[in-house]
Image (cartoon, rainbow, N blue to C red; front, side, top):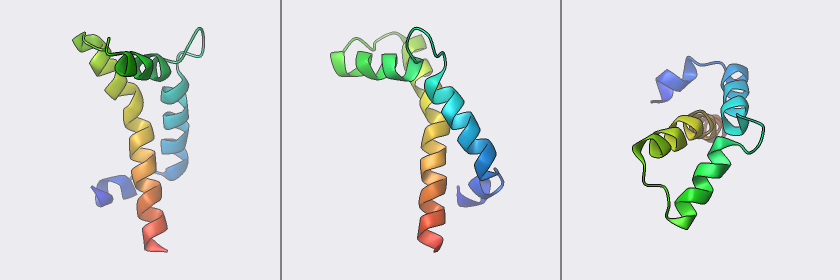
Length: 73
């Protein structure tokens, strides 16, 4: 996993993570909407579950990459 993340430039990953985390900007980001659905217990449709993972994946990869960078120092 680390070697795969090393191939992705940090700036590009950060830009993609920010874009996917907050897209669409209006009326409410999908990630926030899906997390609210998860808390409420209404996240049941497969498309909504896929949407949650799709929008959270870049942010998760960014956090993992930053963790690897911090551990190497």
